[in-house]
Length: 209
Ligand code: HEM
Image (cartoon, rainbow, N blue to C red; front, side):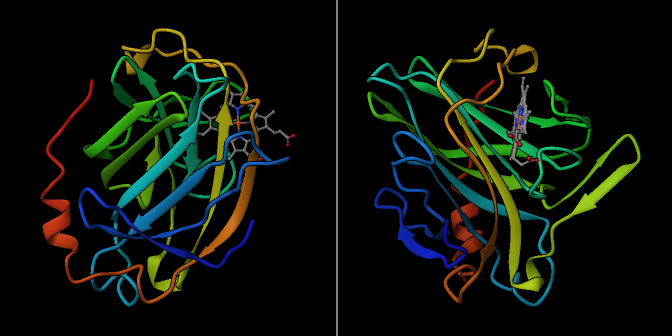
């Protein structure tokens, strides 16, 4: 997986992202993409929020599965964002893991608000504002990502089976991810931060719970 960002402009919203796609192939069936848009000064002053895009794949046209990112890189001791489809909505849950087993609910104050989402036979996608997401604290165990460093270390996973209890994000059950995972340095280029960030962030009005 390349560290070099690919610029992606979302047709529906005009939001411009730096993305780091994983092509469909041996690493993951169907392909996986995560990307971010950052506040205008985020390449010089550390931001604590971003607009994210997750484009995840389902198995065999079934609109199932889940995917996620680690905002610190490893699964453990990082803020985890988990997403999955149920009906026509994409649900999300912040999680935190201290070991390689079902992550706990994140108890910090991160907030996710959706801008748009899609669910179709190929998979599901969600564009979301993630506030208080680039520094985290789970019961005193703290970590952070620094946007002014010019890159983030990110982890990704994808899974074929859907979560249990899919319409209750606080009560989902997961099996270990089975459709690929990775950890990589996600470099930013000049398109990562944008003067339109504030206007884009204002489009985040939908909470799916
Ligand atoms: C890696 C288990 C949920 C993100 C791993 C590994 C195991 C594991 C055993 C290491 C595999 C290897 O190195 O071959 C589990 C189990 C889960 C779960 C049992 C739930 C029941 C999640 C979730 C996320 C996540 C919800 C993120 C949203 C990652 C990432 C890696 C990873 C990014 C690769 C980086 C690393 O090795 O730390 N997981 N996981 N996992 N997991 Fe999970």
